[in-house]
Structure formats: structure tokens, C-alpha cells
Length: 451
Image (cartoon, rainbow, N blue to C red):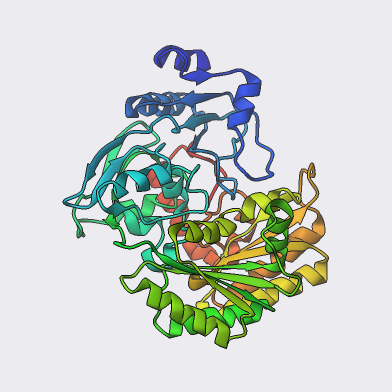
């Protein structure tokens, strides 16, 4: 079968060497992939069309892939599949400063788009921690969030329109280039977060925003407990500071970073809160956040005075995941609760870690109530041990009981499927499966993922 695909595409587009194929079959999870037939390195929309027409004809599963930085298993190859990599589709087709949008291919690195926009006094707002290595296509597929989402929203909030190749090779254009548009159902919003189960995104029209005129002002506050830090978050939001970034790191995460990069962690520090304002009165807002942190128990607060100091403070947060990977294999979770429930959710995570004797390192997009508890277990272990799954079960159930959700920005992939029924219920599951059948009647697009 695959020989027909090799002949249909330009030379070098299809890889079949087992070792090379295996390197494309994984994302950043511990999950073991199935044995894929091969990898397609698409460089144009037409090559994606050819691949999907071939896959439909031969009933071969297709697993779309961006940079492979996902944390939920959505890009993990299934048995007998073709991995369709979009990483070589890297063109910024259009950047329109007057109307504040860009048209980009899925392989564009998130940070590269932001840098291109800033040359025109604009910015691309979504800012995942992996922004220097993750791609726009992957961000769209998982509806990624990021550090600035407390002010600017998640990827869906910046997606205006998409070019999508459907399972049978037809091309669908959704959305618009205008600020407003309500013609028909919101197909753009439907595809954002669908993890390649409904179609393959080959181009996106995304919203750009005016970049702040002055460098953002940043604070880093140290606390003797996570609950004090969470209380400071509530106070900052209630005071109307409108931070553009509000990140919380627990002691275990800070210790992992300190062991790796020696950030001067004090013995008494149990949590760090990093806040930022990019408003025109950013320095005044940062000073107010500093005061509120001190009023809620902060033992020390640093206030940046230069862009370099800001980058150093934000860099601590961006190092979090790599530091935890050094400790062991990571089951990375992504619960989101109402902001008022943040202290209770932190307590629930701590209780689950103690009850099941599991190391859990937690960071949070605190201004959104979006927590990332990372369950650490031994490197080389194919499957998390029973106590890790038990702790994760407890954390997810606690989040749902507090009115939260199973995933705020990482997607469902393979890792969260076991808990889906707890949140969605049978009616929602039936509707979502019906939508899947409309777009992918043969079930060849990323089978077994997301729904």
C-alpha cells in the first residue's frame, strides 16, 4: 500500500526506515506508540490532500503531528498508521498590520510569529511555555493556553479562520479575516482543540494585537505556603490589577529548578508567584501587586526594573517542565477550577500526594485557576504505577467536584480518555461522536484520541 503513496508524492516526502519512523511516533509523554507504516513530511497543502486521499482509499489511520511537544498523547502513533508531519510547512503567508492579522502555515513556531508581528508593533498573544519549540498547528489542535492567557485568552480566542483538509481530501475554509463574523456555525472554533480528529489544518488566519508600548513590569513573590500565594492571587484579581501574567510554582517545582540551575531558593520558600502587567501604567500595577503579595504573607517580593530582569524572572517559570523531566518520567495533568477554588484545589493536590506517597510538582496559570500537577515516577517505567493513577484519579475528581474541568489547555489525547465520562456525560459523548462521524465517517483521523 505505501508504495503507492511513495510514488504519488515527491521524492523524500515519505519515510519508512523503522528507526526514523519511531522518532516521529512519539510526543513528550511516556506513552509507547504503535508501529506506524511510515511518516509523510508534507510541505504543501496538496501533499496533505494526496496523503489523505490515499489514506481514505486504503483505510489507513492518519496521525497528524506538529513539533511533537504535546503533553497528552494526541500525536502518539497508532498501530498501522501514517504519521503526517506538518512541521515543514513554515511559511508566514501574509502579515497585515493594518487589519491586525496573519495567515500562517501550521509548522510556524509560535515565538517566530510573535517576533515577526513585533516588527510591526504587534504581537501574537498566545504564549505557551513551549513557545520557542511548539508550532501554531499544534497550538490550534490542542487549543493551547500559555502564560499570557489570563489577559488575552487561549489559542481559540486568536483564531479567525482555518484552511482544513478533510479525511477524504476535500478542502474546507472556515471563518474570516474580519473582526466579526457570524455566518453559519462556528466551524473554526470546532476545529480548534479537535486534536486532528476532524481534519488536518494546513493554514490559519490568526488575530494579532497591538504590542505594549513599554516593556512589561514583573514581580516575583516568595511565600511560606501555597495557600498564602493563592490568597494573594485572589486579592490581585479582586483589586482590578488585570495582570497579563500570573504564574504560581510550588516548592517541589522550585527545588527541581534550583537543583538544575541554582536560582538561590531559600529553605523557607514554599511557593513563588510571578505576576506581570503590560498595561500603560504597568509599573504602578506591579507595585500594587507587590503590596497585595506582602499583605498576604509574602516574605520577599522582587520587582523588575529592566527588560533583562523581567526575562530572568519569567525564565524561572519556563524552566519548570524541563526541570521536572530530570526527576523522572512525568504524568502531566492540567485541571482547571474556578479561581475562587484555587486554594482548595491546591490543598486537594497536596492531600493526594501525601495519601498515595507520590511526588507531585505543581505549577499554575493562577489567574485562570488552571493548575498543572505533574506526577513523577521512575524513568524507564512503561506505565505509571498504581499509586500514581490513584492520586491522579483523586485530583481529577476533586477538580470536577469544585466545578472545574479535566483539561484547561493540553487537550485530551490518550492520557485523559479514562476520565472523560466523569465530565462529559452520555448525551455530550453521543453528540461529539456524531460530529466525528460527519467529518470522518471512516474513523481514520487520529483514531482513539480526544473523544
